[in-house]
Length: 293
Image (tube, rainbow, N blue to C red):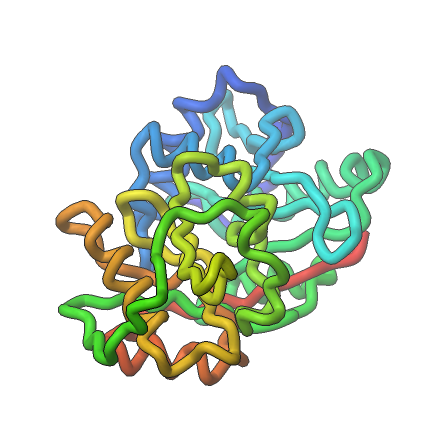
């Protein structure tokens, strides 16, 4: 039995590629009792690491008596113009929580990350996970916005005729153009242009073209039907283009996978309403939190 007065000495250290398999096991264990357990196998875990630019040599493991009981996976890149660390998953296995391991990991790594040139730390946390929200707030993280996970548990309500002059086909990033005209706001870290580029063949991007101009697009996880970016040019809405893009994604999604919209900004009320009208439902809400370093 653990008492509240015990003094625990944690061994926090940076990791390397040799820890990948151990991290997968600990990741699954740490999130097994969450409201949304991670459905990860080795391939999906590796994709998660690549998409989020995780550097294991700057990610931390927390060890107690030689056993890894916690971890913090850190991704690195630029976020809104500043060198940024992204928390791609911090977890502690059940039985070792609320004993100071998360604080020990952050106390260990934050000074080193600052010295390495990072200017801010970005993460997402489930809104009803009060202990985690309070922990991060105590470190100095501040809520930036609320992000939603939407799921379509049944058939999509797709209506509207598609203009015959619209061609839907795979699109390159260079063909899409500025995100602002599609009204998708600022994507989350894992849905950013950089993340989509890193994910390579694990992301499919379909564009809707009229006279060679991209007027709408859908970037989603290949075979999984998880939308990262989705938008239609404001001058071409109401023509069935969005419905066609959804239908094309559904036809390319493996059987058994629910269609999802990942981390859509809740303040984009029109976009959220559109997906709800198509049959998507809110499955999860997260706070995006940011801390200056």
